[in-house]
Image (cartoon, rainbow, N blue to C red; front, side):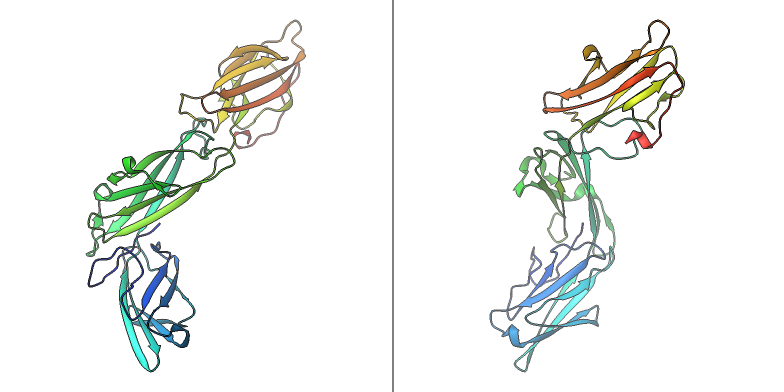
Length: 323
């Protein structure tokens, strides 16, 4: 996440100064505040293999290198300016060039459009064949140090190197993209700039989908859903009747969310996220309970189950949302 500005006699849009006698290249092209930088020089007219160069930052000598190597720098803080001067010595001659680097930040938020329980402290995983909302949050300052309204900036979104023309433009700080297919990865990037192109920032992120899952929880009539204890294996329960809830994690919400089908001892019992079991006779016995969650639109599915034993005190461990 970053921003960089070049100060040159002519307006340019890249980090490499290609005019003679030598060029300067900074990597990454748009460094973020305090990010490590790599600076190298090159030339078609100067024998760089037999040359040395010095790098000055804001008037102070920062580092020395040879023409065949690169040197390391660190970007300054947000809203500051790095006035960089490079002096190349070759064949008894000296050549110099200057540029100004002003790192500013742009954060890229990834918001999968997927299911999660209320108040869940973590984030949703990226659903295969689902969608992801991307939000760019730039922090730009003018040359005079005035904060620039993000709504006035231009945003160019790309997926896999292909520009999303319809989703790009001034004020287009967010976009909804399709998630990658299972076991694949997709790069999403955004290029942010002011309207004259003198301030530029870039950020990218790799989207990797994860298979969704479902967890089963007991629902207490007074305390609500007991998210601290996910049910599996054999669970001993007490009470005349007990309710359970199936909670899907990471299913796509593009088509409204997945469907849930409960099975009791292998036979379909009912649909919906909640089921209530009531023991027969003396109130003792066992039952195999499972829930199948599926979303045909995205080809996603997951199942979970346990054996409920009635007739004695409930036992079980506790953990955050049972995960």
